[in-house]
Length: 216
Length: 216
DNA sequence: TCCTATTGTGAATCTGCGTTCACAACGGAG
DNA sequence: CTCCGTTGTGAACGCAGATTCACAATAGGA
Image (tube, rainbow over all chains, first blue to last red; front, side, top):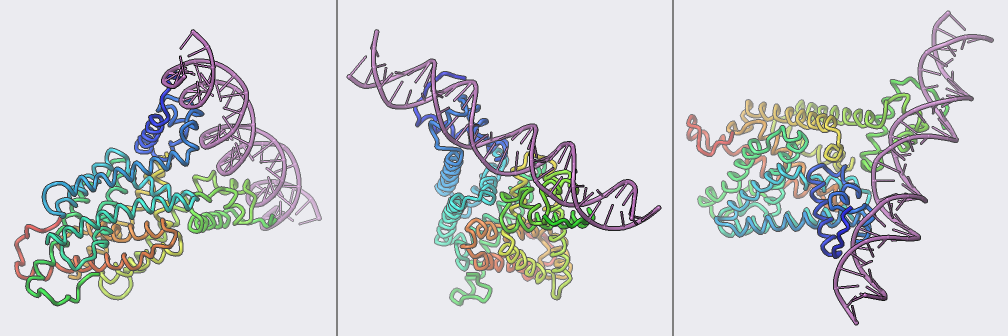
């Protein structure tokens, strides 16, 4: 083994990064301490100098995914155009991520389903709802800008956004890449986008009355 | 242990049923041969008289879930009303199932993500796309009936349907029941339903020309 | 009733994996 | 240069769970 000695701050980073990459490349099944250690260039036992155990490593991975998701939304939101354009970019980014990282996000959610630990489920739940909260905020901005109809709750928009992204991702990951999520995903996206825009056009005719079809 | 001796046909059924129930109640983590055998009233070793191994049991469970899904769609499709009403019932059934069976379906999908076996992934993929195919067929019927707009590919409808159902299910399962999928799910559904109905009304004005907003 | 294939049992085995431990090597502070 | 806390190592331990095996009990036909 490499006899290099590094500070624990650096090692923690390396280990989390290696674990993240392993999950992305080979799935959670392959995530054992031995594999992570090998990837970093350490003996398995060395890992315990920097993390109390495997669970803690997984927590660190989850934390990274969380940061990544938050970062992506922030990046997309700060780009040009209205909120709807930002959502579209988010959609593209999401599908691209699935292609290169083997549905890392669904994989972590999957783990939460199986892990007996209620604590881990709570954490994953927090990450997902945090993400949805940010998407909802983007939707709210879109409503203020007039790009998105106002008779839909921002949370509903976020939920549906997730619904547009998730199934294509899932199918792509399940098929091992044989199923290309771009095409069917895009069709669903177009319909979604069209739906989000639709109402304001009609709303101009009857500006005030809360129409019976309103969704809240 | 119960000294009862039964034919292998019956035992296979019992074992698959017990495994299915275990997954639904406690998740995949708890699905070990010992637990399954205990539930059937057998010693763990007896299980191997009827299945070659644990993998085969899981396959049988997947098969049952497949049958159940197909059955649900068939049941819903044979009910009263148009295809849109049937889809609505399917939506309700799905959410109800999540409540009582701890997101059995996502759990199996989750397993496929983690299982190294490409064979299992293929099987789960087949089940999911089979299900989607049937939903698409329902959507096609809806288009023939005039209940669903015709400028959307049936497969896109099926994909979006899955997208409407999946996120609420996931959040509910993750939160351990604290998150009630009914309310936000229903809001998304209403928007979805409204979207599916919308176009034909506008199409009457310009019956022929493939409008630019058409989604295929 | 007896016989035999089938089904059931408990103990033993095997394996993968997380974790611990006693000891060695490193590297910066003094 | 020396010392000591930090980091790294290989071997060993413990455990959980799948699988095997030699043997016992059962059921149904001859």
